[in-house]
Length: 43
Image (cartoon, rainbow, N blue to C red; front, side, top):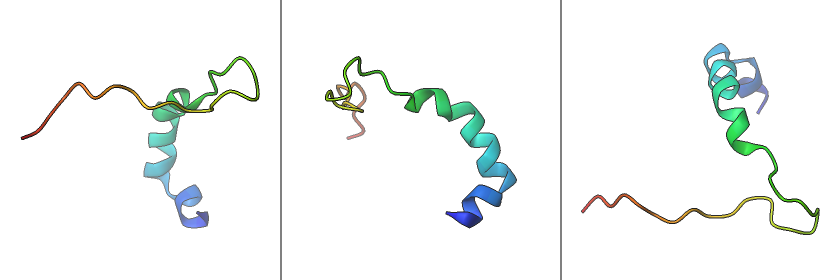
């Protein structure tokens, strides 16, 4: 994790992806993340 924290490319990636991982649950007892329905299939 330390190497990831120091990597400039990872830091840039985190700037763009952090909003995707913000908690959306109203109650602290609710799930933090929830799976989305799959809409793309590669067969």
